[in-house]
Image (cartoon, rainbow, N blue to C red; front, side, top):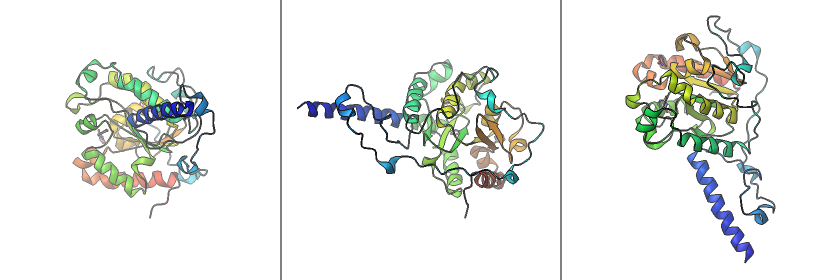
Length: 294
Ligand code: URA
Ligand code: URA
């Protein structure tokens, strides 16, 4: 009898936890006792949790990056020093987020879900909070090697609560496929988590307000590589005024991630001739990630 009560509580807690992960856009759920610890079910939870080894995210190891793949940095561009992300001089917008990669795979889903809950209630940008249908937190593998950062949700994203699901997202999906990757194995988010009215550019204040969330996602996922799609992402993340044309084809450092900047898929929809440049950028990135392209 006690067992039955315990199991129904466990089911309920599991449902709630899975729902919070779904809301946070998680596509992978590493199963381990750290994650499957439910309140009020001590007796049940203290028995061996059923860990499905198949469900644990296996990340391919990154080999030592060949020095020959390094593109010389553009001297006109300031590379963000690895330390600055969490230090005093991180633009005054990022909070102290702790150490890079301090979380293990099992801890990331709950950390992202907690952050997503804070984002869903955020009213730092009053205009955006008043006009959004919902916040658009992010989607993907909480242990992704590769993170994509876009600009801000548009109409489709505001409706669906997921980044890059509109026309630009369809093109992004084709780029992902060409890289032999899937949307679910990377982690996708934006500079802003709310749609700016009429899709106007984010203001500096809005980007600053949202920076704590972006840096939180970066810190939790701790990706090895980041792609900044378009000038809003590139300029905000790296704190530079350089154009995408000058930033592309080289790697910058943010925290412990190597950052590549390239043209935004929306820009490609208006300027299809730039697709070949993006493909060159993806080829450079895949080489650096040691992912073979056919
Ligand atoms: N453009 C972006 O930059 N991000 C999205 O999520 C959608 C379109
Ligand atoms: N300008 C932008 O805003 N985005 C790009 O991707 C390229 C130029």
